[in-house]
Image (cartoon, rainbow, N blue to C red; front, side, top):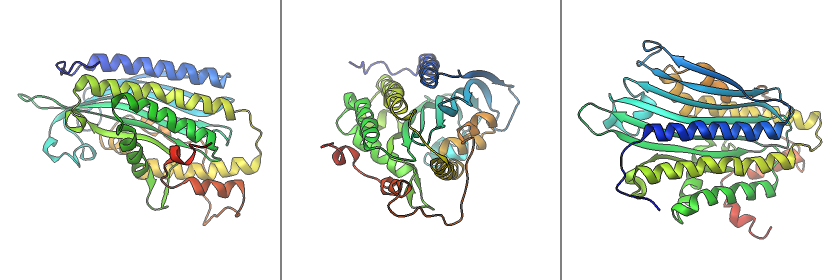
Length: 323
């Protein structure tokens, strides 16, 4: 299936895939919303703009005020810089001082109905370059689900689809990247996961599983293609459920947790801000509305209290195997 002699870094092939992925996800989500389409905002950076000599451009696509999607953004970017920022070299000090390319698609969908989960996904390629030396490349990405009112059927579908994305690449891949997702999307100051997980991977290159560039790229495509397969059926099932002010208030409160994670822990946000990236694109993931309440605890036995039973790492497939 994979030709291990084809080790060349093919940036254009990756870029073309990412642009097509952005188009497909936006088309499917707009169809599911049914009231609005994504606007397109293409952008470029001048060569001397920002810090670290960042140049390049991208295409942001945003849907706001839809009947189903209150705010959704699907970004493509391809940027270059003269030196890698601290966030990218923290675990790779030997790469400090190298120039870089980074390209990827990143998205966050904040639905209007509290019974529809928020979801995030991204897939990306980094290349660290130095004159006279071979480029150092790695892939990263994944997707995760953040429900406010969890449904076991949805969580099972989400993780079955996550596993389906990984299975062609080895029996241990889903287990490894599911566990990394639980570890990464964890709010340490709250002692809870951001949601019910999914997949997270980084530093994927020849040293991880012995895969060459083509196979790592194939895995990126599998993850990217499976996001909409995982998410759209959940949106379709829950988007017409009746809700009231109580559910909306709880959704906005829990969105505050989402904002806390993105600003305090998210690597993509930190990388973008450290490189002087395009602020509108970096902070597109923030919810349109969110609230904070002092020392709030839901009443025991309520729908709202049920969520907190789901905010710790679990083997969801084993939990629901008899469902």
